[in-house]
Length: 276
Image 1 (cartoon, one colour):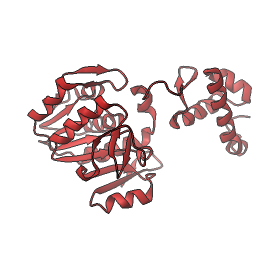
Image 2 (cartoon, helix red, strand yellow):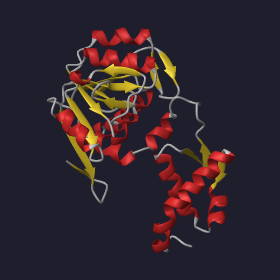
Image 3 (spheres, rainbow, N blue to C red):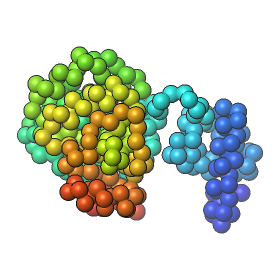
C-alpha cells in the first residue's frame, strides 16, 4: 500500500494506529522503518499515524520512531512534546489572544505552550510600549530583543518539564506590578473547579498572576474542558474571557457563557488561518 491508496488507507488507518499503539506499549519503543515494513505502508503514513497517536497522548514521537508513555511516570509531558499537541488550535487561540492586547499595557503570560503561541503572535505586531511579565523561559526567550517589548521575569526554581520559574521567591514579584490582563493556560477546566494545573507549585505561581491582574483570560484548547487537575489556581467567577477552539463541548461552552463569561471560539480554515 502507498500513500496514494486513500481508499484502503482511510478504512484501515484507525485499526493500524491501534495496533501501533499496542506494539509501542508492549515493547516500549518502535522505529518508523520497522513499522512501515511490518504494515506494508510508507514511512510518511507511519509518521502520520504516530502524530495522531501523540495528539491523543498515547506515545511520544522521537527522531526515527516513538516511545511509550509509561503509566504512573511523569505527571506531565515535557514542554517540547506538549508544544506539538493541538498546535493548530493553539496557534488560533494565540492569534486571538494577541488581538486583545493593547499597546501600553502590562500583561502576564504563564509558562504554558498556548501562551507561547500567543507570544509568537505578539512578535508579528509593532509595539511602542508593551510590558510582558512571564515565568516562562521559552516565552521570555521568544520575546527578548523585540522592539517596543519589555520582558520581566520573577526569580525562582527552574522546572524543566515546563521550562518555568516557580517558588515563593518569585510569587511576591507579581504584587509589585500592575497587570491589565493575565493570559493563563490550564491542564483542566470545569465550572465547579475552575482552571487547574497538575503541579501545585505551578498553580501557586498562576494564583499570584491571577490575583494581581485586572482581567483573567483563559487560553485553553478543547482537550482541557471537563477535566479537573489536582490544583485549582483560578475560580470560574474570576475569569473574564475564555479563548478556545470550536471543538470545545457545546453544552459546557453555553453554560460558561451563561455565567456572563465572554467565550470566544476559533476555527482553523483550510489554509490554516483563523476564523472567529
